[in-house]
Image (cartoon, rainbow, N blue to C red; front, side, top):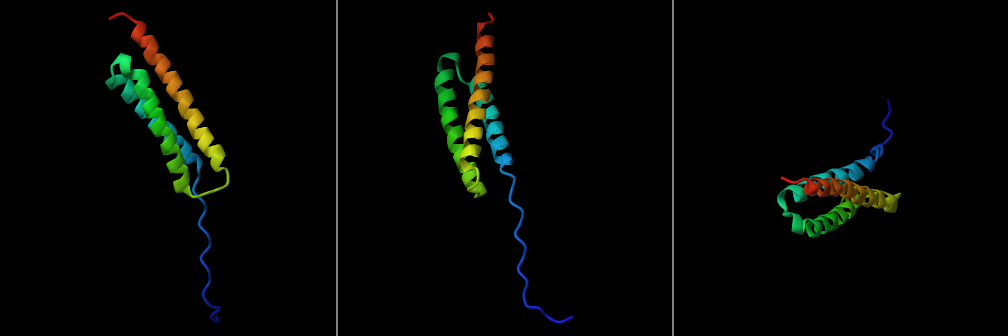
Length: 102
């Protein structure tokens, strides 16, 4: 067989960007549970806001790390909206648990 020159390598399949969204949701779950367990009740709302700010920054960082421009806004919005809903549901659970007398 004759030599046809150097062939180019095929482009790698792009990473699944949905993994980044789920990773942000997992980090949100861990952060919210940590705030709910380790922070006193009177400081819980303030620390939830701090944790949510960290999740928003994490969402941007993860989606920028993926390096895909298509759907960037949709992925970041999905990450942040899902994180907000997840934090809301978990914080409602902690709020209801605080109503139970010990």
